[in-house]
Length: 297
Image (cartoon, rainbow, N blue to C red; front, top):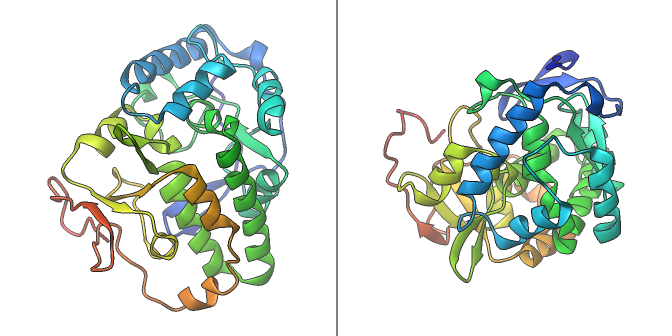
């Protein structure tokens, strides 16, 4: 199989030029997955499951167990949806790939999580530019079993729809950064130490190690407005990781009214991805080891 998604156009964003895709919901073509497709899933699944104990937050690992994730075959969206509906009211919908913001927000606000139907090729195990089925299913879906995180995701979707209607492009950029530094690349403080919960980390072999073990990046306590002002990189591992004290903190931040925040941030200078500010709660100041010149931009 390994058919490529139908690209519609490219758009320029804070994170560079990224593709846009068809907006419709598609059925997961499960019977069309090849042995190679299932083998790619198995390789990635077994590699990450061996790596993540002691690195991923316990809620993530337990949710994967509850959903019945296994290496033997690509999971079925409808089977996972039944478990999610029982636990938190979420369902999965198949999509071609990245969605326009309005469509994405509408899905989240309705407790539907879009999952890309196609999986990367065997020669793309370590890197793929576009989110595929492994990133979406393995990385994003498990924490939708957590009631607090599930509510955070719905609140984020509702907030995105409101921002689009009332506050415009700069507010959407603020929200994109919030999603990036929490849902995709967030760390959480547990009793045992820092752990991963962001999907972009837990689905990546290299960043699962780098995010916790490398001395190079900053690790800074979560602050909503700080995060919403901070640029990020898509061409390298993250220069800064923001650390929450629990999913309740994340949900509480999203529950507040963002209407006064957007005007306050409007026109303020964005913060480079690798910068450390005097006001930051610094858990670890990165050594910047291995960063190319200008990498904190």
